[in-house]
Image (tube, rainbow, N blue to C red; front, side):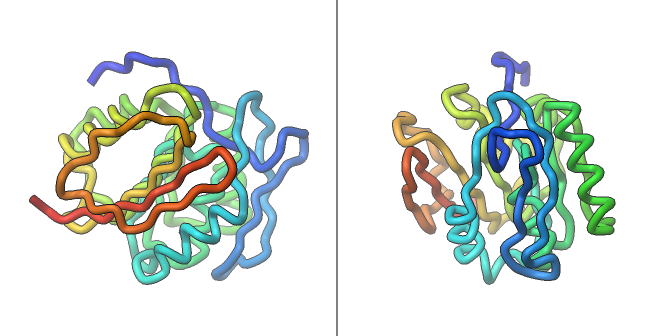
Length: 201
């Protein structure tokens, strides 16, 4: 697959230097990790994150996770803290990716990998199946449909994978595969977030 649109980095906890991501639960509960301040990064609220991981409570332990637009690392570190077997983090911005590496060293996590690169290019190769995939790209960049297609076509999903999609409310209809079933859906402010469960066709 050829990358047709330039990605931008996903998210940060706030827009000032010295921001942080807070881990809500698990072995690092209450821990605050610094995030690199990159222009255009979008906040991920604790409220949304807590709701998502309540949805995933029965699935996160010993799961293999793929975070395609990692940004601050809020979803990845939360998954690791709650017992995920492994997490692969994709982050386009080099400084943000470096900060993720530093934070992994800080908490002494050895079961996570940071890849500084383009998510769609990464997904264009033959994949390793993952149990949980986080799709939370920059708003209004028209990336989600190509991500869904690449995940399905290139073998990135286990038969019963859970796929989380966070997007702007005004996003048009997506072509969701027929064997992806909407498990949960909610809105907060200008954000709509959904969790799909996959059943192997």
